[in-house]
Image 1: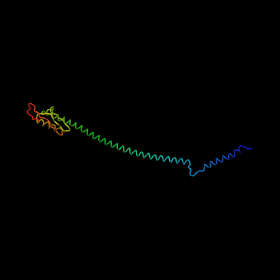
Image 2 (image 1 turned 120 degrees about the vertical axis):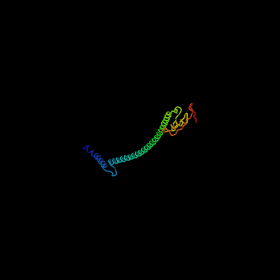
Image 3 (image 1 turned 135 degrees about the vertical axis):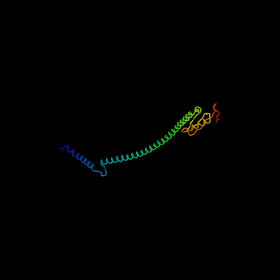
Image 4 (image 1 turned 30 degrees about the vertical axis):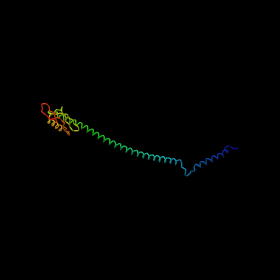
Amino acid sequence: MHTPIRNINPLLIILLAGVILAVSACSKQDPQAETVGQKVDKAIDKSNAAASDAGRRIEDAAGRAGAKLEQGASQAEQAIADATKKASAAARDQAGQVASVVDDSAITASVKADLLKDPGLSVLKVEVNTVHGEVTLSGKVDSEDAKARAGRLAAAIAGVQQVRNELQIVATPGKGAGKPV
């Protein structure tokens, strides 16, 4: 009698032989073939090299951007300095003009006050105009002496550069003859 084990024997032997061949084929290594660990190591090395290269590129780009930023900041700083100088000069010019107007007004007021103190001169008949320190006297007085006194009073005021005495001499009734100029 045949048992089923005897029938399986040749089949089992062939199966075992196939497994042995497969295992032996796997254990044989091609000297040029890489192991899984070596492949992983190479992949890690390539990733590290790529990351390092990317880092260098980023540093280069950041350096160029920084240089451009510094250049732009320098140009902006110069533009601000130039604008500040121009604004300062304009402010000084405007301040000078305002000071001139204030000085001229003060001179006019001082001349009128001194004319008012002189009993022989009528402030109502003498006009005083001051521009850049130049005083112009116009109107009417009754004598050459009054005209000269008005000119001297104006010239004595601080800040007066020049006096233009355009006063006209007009004889007043009862005071005698004055000479028209």
